[in-house]
Image (cartoon, rainbow, N blue to C red; front, side, top):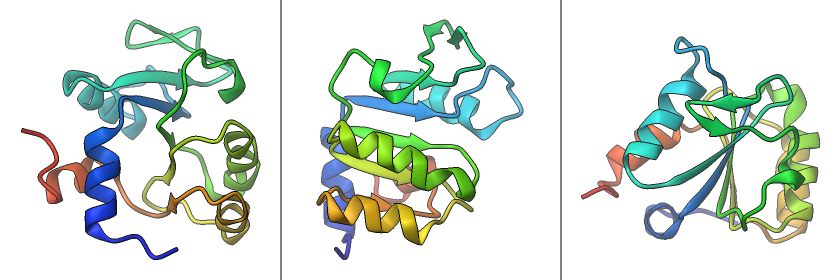
Length: 137
């Protein structure tokens, strides 16, 4: 599925719940800064990291399947090698969209998402795309 700017804009504009896989309390990690930015812009963020109890004051979940809300976007901050397993878990929850951050790319992950008709974007920063597409008011 070829994703257009219009599709990305609509996805980002309508999303409410974003699972941040690989969320970290370390302020030097991109996941920390982006989660903070998303929260400031009224997205409900659900950090997913088995090594954290909470991130930025928000309860963290060990796995995606523990997140108690319907997930609109699964935003993945993990290495490419982990992407397929994460997408496999995410696909079982039927999120609206799967987003692999910059430098995260996996043909297997893309195949899994496509097989479930879940849009996936790889190797792009959600923060940069929110700004580029002028999604935020």
